[in-house]
Amino acid sequence: MSSALVEALRAGLPADAVLTDPDVTSSYAHDMASFCDAGAPAVVVLPRTVEQVQHVMRTATALRVPVVPQGARTGLSGGANASDGCVVVSLVKMDRILEISPVDRIAVVEPGVVNATLSRAVAEHGLAYPPDPSSWEMCTIGGNIGTASGGLCCVKYGVTAEYVLGLDVVLADGRLLRTGRRTAKGVAGYDLTRLFVGSEGSLGIVVRAVLALKPRPPRQLVLAAEFASAAAACDAVCAVMAKGHLPSLLELMDRTTIRAVNSLAHMGLPETTEALLLAAFDTPDPAADLAAVGALCEAAGATQVVPAEDAAESELLLQARRLSLTALEAVKGTTMIDDVCVPRSRLGDLLDGVERIAEKYALTIGVCAHAGDGNTHPTVCFDAADPDESRRARESFDEIMALGLDLGGTITGEHGVGVLKKEWLARELGPVGVEMQRAVKAAFDPHHLLNPGKLF
Image (cartoon, rainbow, N blue to C red; front, side, top):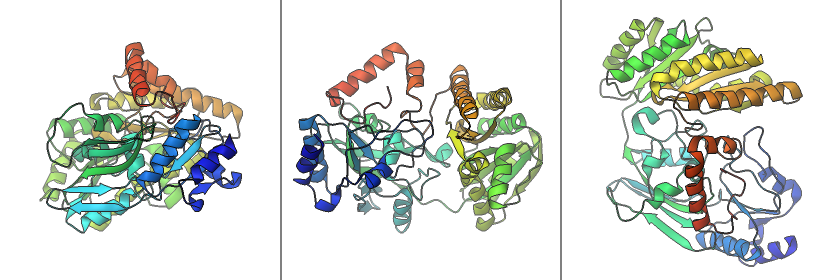
């Protein structure tokens, strides 16, 4: 089968777009998630055109071979992991920005465009593409769409799903489906565009996206507030949102995360504090907004409130937050990164619960969070070479997800389900929800060839 598959693929692809060397193909086997099984792909293809993707899917359907679409493999749930004998379709070569329209405020892009590349390109037109995952310098728009990713600015500007207006999708049988629109409004038929956003490559392969853009906002200013307890910091978050403020970001780092960042980057963050809250505004008068939020933080018990004086100081504070996950990984060498999202009003309960779970399992678990929308990233640090510690890490991870559901939240706010959380998806959706999701999958992919073993 393997030789027939490779021969059939090469019939419609350039020779350098079909990779079969096991040493090379093995490097495409998995994303950045821990505890997620990955198989050995039979072949990796790197198409450059829509027609080439269609050829891959027609070939795979004819031979009944599973297909795993991939972007930059920066995912954290195993959603891009290969299965044994599959065709990996890496879309990184489809990296053209096809159009930027300042009048319509849209960009039309291929899936391999890197998030930061698009952001910089539209900035030249006075526009912004707001979704900004922490991996924005590496992750691709196609991957962002597949996982419905978020980022630091979601509290004000929303997530990826709110910016995807239309898609071109190659279906499992090779047909090309166009969904959505280029217009500001449009309600014709079922919203298939939203269906594909967050589907993790299980329904089709996105080959083109029409994205909404915003006017580029003013440079933001950041405020840092120190708290003697995580509960007090969460109280401040609730106060800020209850008063109607709309910060461009509202981020939280706990003591464990602060110390990890200092250890990695020597940034001089205040290690004596239990929680650090970062608030930013990109309004016409950000200093006034920061002053109002600073007063709310002090009322909630902040021990110190320090507003940045300029963009350089603001960027330094944001860099500390962006380094959080990398710094926590350096603590023990391996991490399991959760992304439980809860109602803002239960944020303090989640952090308290994570602290209890860390004590129960004798593990280091740091928490950084998009606090403004309740999306937390409890990060379990462990030594993967220690079987007992690895077991405790997995059990603590599961308890955190259970805690999130108990608090009225969800098992994933932006990382997706992939392999890591598929057992938990059924618990969140319930039997009727799972049945309907499987029916949707069967309608688009009747032979279950696209990204098998993911979601459910």
